[in-house]
Amino acid sequence: MKVKLFQKTQRDLAASINEVIDKYWEDEIDEDQMIKTIQQLYAINQAKMVKGDKYTTVIRQQCGKRRLDIVSKVLENGLIK
Image 1 (tube, helix red, strand yellow):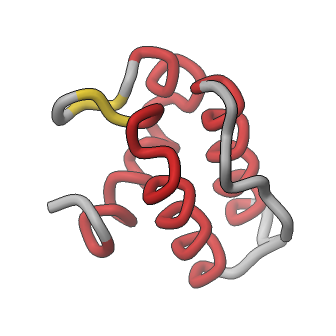
Image 2 (cartoon, one colour):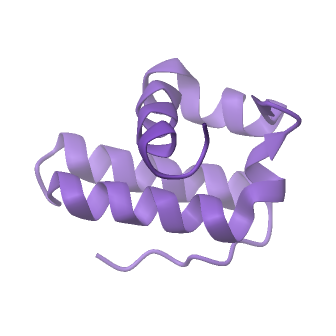
Image 3 (cartoon, helix red, strand yellow):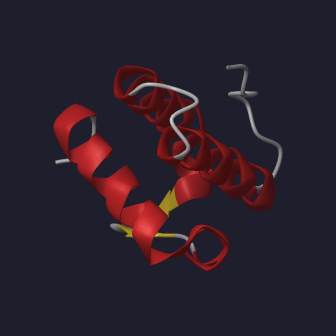
C-alpha cells in the first residue's frame, strides 16, 4: 500500500489516516502495516496532527472517534506516551 507520508494540509493527513484504517478494517492490509504507516504519518506530520496534547480540530472532524481511538492506541505503543 502506498500512502504519501509528507502531507500538505491537515485535510490531506486526515484522508490518509482514514484510508489506512479503512484498508485495515477491510482486511486489505495487515495490522503491522497499518501500525507502521500510522507511526510514520505521525512522525512526519506531528504538527498537523496534534496541538498540545490533543488532535487538531480538522483531524478530529475528518477522522472521527473510532479511527482516532485506533490511532491513539498505535501511538501510545509507539510514539506518544
